[in-house]
Image (spheres, each protein chain N blue to C red):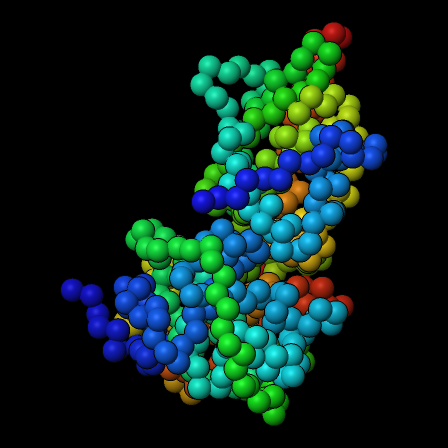
Length: 287
Length: 165
């Protein structure tokens, strides 16, 4: 028998596809699809879901950074999301971008967030309803957040460097080949402009996928504890930084560590390898 | 019901692109953003129509999954005596929607082009069709199908040269 979901540290952040199908029209919630495939939402989505594009909606169009609090408030208003709205994320690629969007929402202090376990692939595999109809919601009032929580759940290069020098836990969630420096691209993806291969010295390799089952759902609480607590040796009060190439796969691991296992101090280094691997004189370890 | 691709007009301005492709480029450039997306989806949904049909034979078949591509892509090329090419393409299920759209566009837009025309084709038309906003990190595979078609042309010409040597 499968382990109860209540064994996760914060089981309230996960909903199943079955639950979602029965609660599509619940008041006080907004379903958000976030994908890597830029046109996937347009081909059909969960009825009532809005689309939030990780690049066009969440990132600054010029500087490599996230949007301003003012732009976030405007995005929320446009999608009918107020601070009290529960936002339920799902997407392609085992929820990489759904977790990324959730993490970005948390950067702006939005706390009512959930993930659909298994994401878009599971929803479709189960033959559930899709629509091309793009919903329109009345604009909501969303006060401009006082600040972005960059200090709490986001790590920058300097902080990550200080972290490795202090020998604090760093989790590299990329594929083993990327970690070892054998390849400078993700398997099945083109090169994305990285000049050097390898990993941050001292970082432990735990590919994001180890936290997932084949159907894109998250592994059970005990399986996750085995991977991160027993396997990597993470302790409850550790200060942890996760990274990948551009911060989306590490958002997935950030979600697992923060919400499913309850580690209180986890940050996502979104500059990740596309910053570290290009930085002059940044120390790199191979193998 | 899926949207039907808008047919490009026949009298599009001449350009360095093969005429059918130039017409498609002209059409997309005239569309507002939302309609551009709708047409890309319509083209993507027609990608299966460009798979090989039963009984068809080809002069070159190249089915492979490159390490840097999400899924298997098969390129099937038939070449007329006057070296005009006709393509069929198979795509694995994990291929992105934009890549599916570009498959339909290229199969249609390059049909009947000569091997040299295809090899000389610059990739700068892609953002003109897709729009600059959609050509970005994690959607670069939109160029992949053109690369594979050119590769097929190159292999075919090399074989001809080798046979004539």
